[in-house]
Amino acid sequence: MTSISRLRSALSRFGIFAAAFLVTACGGGGSSMAPGGNSPPPSACAADCGKALVLLTDADGDFLSYTVDVVSLKLKRANGTTVETLPATTRIDFAQYVDLTELLTAATIPNGGYSSATLRLDYSNADITVEKDGAPVAAKAVDADGNAMGVVDVTVNLDNRHHLNISAGRPSLFTLDFNLAASNSVDLTTTPATVSVIPALVASLELVDQKDLRVRGPLVSVDSGAGSYVVDVRPFHMRSQRFGQVTVHTDTDTVFEVNGTSYTGSAGLEALSAAGPDTVTAALGTLTTATRDFNAKTVFAGSSIPGIGIDAVIGDVIARSGDVLTVRGATVVRNSDGPHFARGNVKVTLGPDTKVHKGGTVPAQVVDIDAISVGQSIEAFGTAVPVTASSMSGDWTLDATAGRVRMNVTPIFGFVKEIATGALTLQLESIGGRRASAFDFTGTGTAPGQDADPANYEVATGALDLSGLEDGEAAKLLGFPTPFGAAPPDFTARTMVDYRRMSAFLAMSWGRSGTTAPFSSQEPTGLVLDLDNDAIGRAHHISIGPRVLDLARLPASPAIVPPDDGHTAYLVVMRDQSHSFEDFADFVADLGTRLDGTTVMFSLTASGSYDGDANVFTARSIVVTLK
Image (cartoon, rainbow, N blue to C red):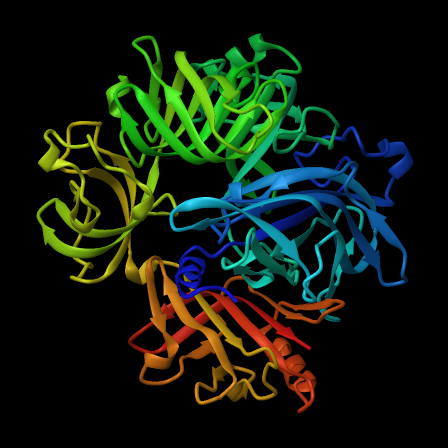
């Protein structure tokens, strides 16, 4: 079972892994997707195939790293035949893809109706890290019987009214969510920590969440007149393979960084063209679902990408002493052999020649090394060396004295203690998803007595509207810590998300034996949990940012209802397979059939929003586990 402190962290840092398939007809239909390296030629495909764009993402979860091998992803037709969509095994650290979606592949698949999908995961070489008392620790994945996880197939069946239908000239959309919070339970009392895994894979024919999309791969060609370029898709940190091709559209506002130099608009395309074919690129932007166009907001290329021609460290600064930054629980990406998750400390050494770019502006602002303070999210480029060669997951050093550092916008969570004109004082709970207790703020102030204090964390808010905030309320802010040695204030916020606009996560569990009667009310328009059920387990909370509400302390059990509009995805998980629904009423009807007095429910998790005044939880996604 998850400890109370760990459960609190899990609830406030809910994770999702998603895969979306955007399917278009081969060579037509107005799509911006070019024929791919793993796709059959249009003459062979003719009108009998469509193109599937597979997208993966992971929201902030209960893990610092969750690396497994994705072996295959098969779609099954209604007639029983299957189609493989992945050309090669892909090793992915899902925990690193927070609020980001990655294009995995552009696969050509035959037309037809598909009723299920099977994702094959290989945990044999899994690298999983959780946080215990502020420190990263290794975790071992086990199945429901306590056996070490190996190769596992996760199958999800689509409901009869929402099969995936692919036909020539008709774009289709398919989304799979691998819910880390619903799929994993962490036990910190064992050594190593134990992660019990019951995979939950949610399917939908629509995108439930809209996030930034990243398209990565080597450059094929640039069309300056059209303001676009084409890449061979090569996701994550892969060094080879061709996963199809995609066209990236840019405009006058697109920001480029090519080999460490910044550009905007057409000048960036010219620099990209000059870099030449096979230059590795990574673009962040959005997808226009109606046209299947990918529109880039930011493009990185060449050595501006971590691990391409230069080593890099990605993480949050937990301490600083002079010109040495300490980053703990970081991803080290080496030019020689790719990414490693470092559970120890990474010491990043700066120098007078270290170039520092501060993101969040167009173009990025050039600042000095003193701008980097405790709590700052960074990407540091230089030469990385493990302190102990036999322990690639331990301590590292990175010499950035002749390199550079990119300062990224950093999120903080806290509770409002005081509101003033242009300022907030918070009880700081977390920085970048890490507990505030993990950070050493020594040296952040103009004098020792002025160092940042998590109990009274001072935030400059400028012209941000604070009228919606109240004392004691949770708030999320995005911005940058004050330059090292210059606090107070301790942080400058550029964006604020108040309590009422934060995403909410509901978690409910029942004991080892589960329950046959989890609801006091079960209607097509809403569910109400029975809080008087004696089988209720340790999880019975709603979390919104850092705030955790105990369901047992609410005046009444909240109603769980679907949203008035937008896309939804609901999943019923059984031990051998799962069933996915897009309509709330269909989901409730299926539950009514299965909960027949002998089938038991073990857990329910839901993501959406919570209205405390009305005591209503609006759920865009729900996962229940039954036996």
